[in-house]
Image (cartoon, rainbow, N blue to C red):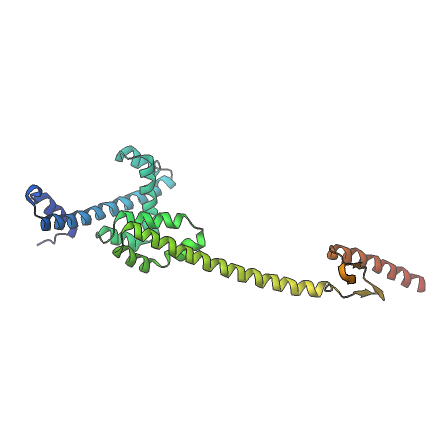
Amino acid sequence: MSSVSTHQAALTAIDRADIDSASVGECVELLGHARRLQGWLHASEARLTSKLTEHHAAGQSASAADSHTATGGVSAAEARRKERRSKTIKDTPSFGEALSHGHIGSEHVDQLGAATASFDKDVKEALLSLHDELLAAARNQTPEKFGRTLRAKARTIEADHGIERNRQQRKQTFISHRVNHHEHPPVGRTLRIGGSPCPTRRVRGGRRGIRQSSSVTLSRWSLMKADRLLMSLGRSG
């Protein structure tokens, strides 16, 4: 005896139902069947869309969006939405699996796709790495609330990444400062080459410091002093 799939059972239940005389409980039950069947259809459509994308990349067909517009009778905007949905499911297979069983709706997948498209690559990868947590939220939230959850989570990740970038920048700045500290004298000190002080300028408060273009000034001045030293050695020799 062959087993009947959940989707076949859902289709049979809807097909055989007398909807005109259905009670409230029966209507709710049939809506559950419809959701499971619709989720399976959307998941299957997403898989077909991904395959069409592969054919298009190989130069064997039109784009998936164009194929949807030509054969599905949908608008260009809806065709692009279906294409993006397939990419989202490809990035997060667990959402495709949940969709095929009716645990979430296609709008949940679309919310995830919209959220990941709104942020940079690092934030997107960090967000998708939380797929188990996000899927649990999607199963218990409406698409609208799930969208808000996604955006809040993404903004938190983005803020954390910004803090980390600032730390790295401060670290690099510190390293650069230490290197420059050894290459050039700090402000307020005098570099002596051949017994002569480095040229300085007077700044506010009577304090002497290195010229603002210190790296250029030191380089030219050092070469000049080296030339004089060589000339002096030549005369003494």
